[in-house]
Image (cartoon, rainbow, N blue to C red; front, side):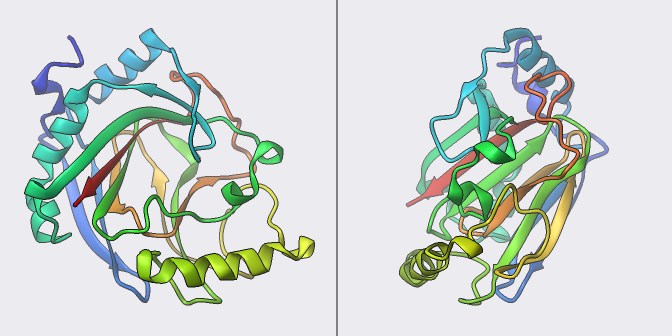
Amino acid sequence: MSVDEKSLYAPCDTMQYECVKFGADQQELVRVDSYIQGADALKQDAIRRNSFAVADSFYPGVRMAISDAYIVGLVRNFQGLIRDFFNLDLRKIKSAASKYSIVTSKPEDLKLMQRMPHFDAPSRDSLAVIHYLCDAADSGTAFYHHGETGYDYIDRSRLGNYEASIVNRLQDPARQPSGYICGSTKDYSQITSYGAAYNRLLMYRGSSLHSGIIGPNYNFDPSPETGRLTVTSFIEFS
């Protein structure tokens, strides 16, 4: 079946979800298990095409295009939650995109800013989504609190103060992080985390400080069949 087929993006009959708020800033997150009926078809599409390339962005790995039908189905499936839980106006979607993604960058190859929690956009009017097409026991996504500033998220009003704190910290070689962050450190406290489970989806604000959980036993497998295959999406609102 073509991955352009709308029926692939219908929610599973067994789909379960929960809406949570976490941390001092009460950041919104939706966790979905048994998300869509076409998860197997998407994984097979990634295996068959397998034209992944190194990401030209902050992402520490490789990416590949996915059918536009994916993001259309995503917005359709969660329109009620986007409106009522995140309080975002669907009529004000400015951009929306999805890609297959696999983390492949080894710890020693990371840029400095890839070694700490990040935010996808300094705006609460944005949503980030990760959909796991793999089971990875030592992987997932974690969310963080920055101790010096007290921030769980970064928007434009907080950006300058946060950047100043980071620059000051990184000037001291002894405080420069090494490898992937995995749990709490002197500078960041892990608030909550979610493991990578097949056909699980997480939706959260793009301003939330977060990081992939890339544990010490992670094998950096670039294969979409056996590696940490996900679909990552980003929706921006005006």
